Image 1: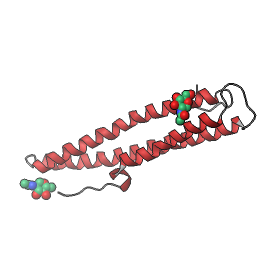
Image 2: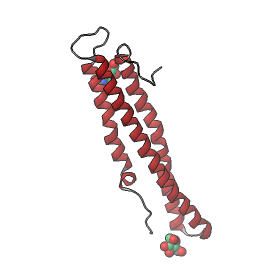
Image 3: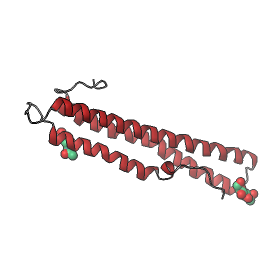
Image 4: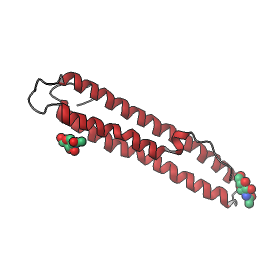
Length: 141
Ligand SMILES: *[C@@H]1O[C@H](CO)[C@@H](O)[C@H](O)[C@H]1NC(C)=O
Ligand SMILES: *[C@@H]1O[C@H](CO)[C@@H](O)[C@H](O)[C@H]1NC(C)=O
């Protein structure tokens, strides 16, 4: 069957996302180990540490969001091409099968955006617990 264009990122998006999400684990770990909880210990510059961790977190979230959205765009284009083929040749089973396969992939990618929300909320919750008293981030209410 004719192969469609996918970038390397989107061919391997689930492995790539898994790796990209480990950044959040590292940041949460860093928050837990370096930022004092209630009282300021004086051992670290908590404000600076919180600011840096916040920026890393935002950068990680943004780059994952971009990666997922660009793969959604690629997959949508492939689905569009297959729909056109199906419209021309509605009895072609290999076209129908391929279209279903690509539609399933597209749904999985879209659900990654929901996974992102959960992952990001969890990290921001820990961030907020640890950093609220040291650093006021632009986005945290
Ligand atoms: C960090 O602390 C939070 C609670 O404050 C906890 O939920 C989380 O599992 C801890 N993570 C690590 C990596 O220690
Ligand atoms: C079905 O479509 C594919 C891709 O366009 C084509 O390669 C194949 O020959 C078609 N099969 C039939 C039975 O028409």
